[in-house]
Length: 97
Image (cartoon, rainbow, N blue to C red; front, side, top):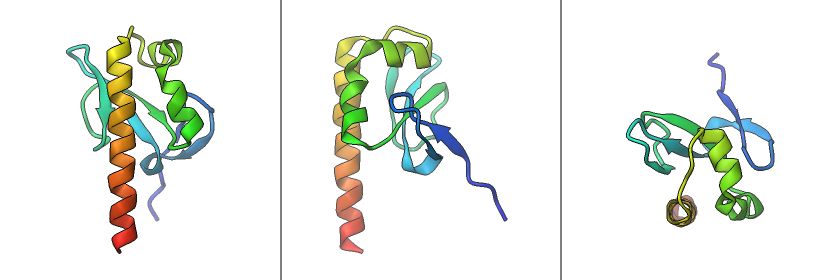
């Protein structure tokens, strides 16, 4: 039996399985972005799909601490938009099944 990888949300600190969390990554080039595949190269941190946690992604300190870099406000807004878009398409696909 294969073990399920567990990760912690950087906002609420709840531990859950990796596949149910949203990964934010700092690439080796220094970009900070949302990683829908969960496989991009770089330092990653995880945020759960809870609306409160997603709203707090805008606070630079949590992301900066987790990724060990400063993320511009524009990148954080783009990340929130990408995560919300990903979650809406994911839920619509699950609704069609």
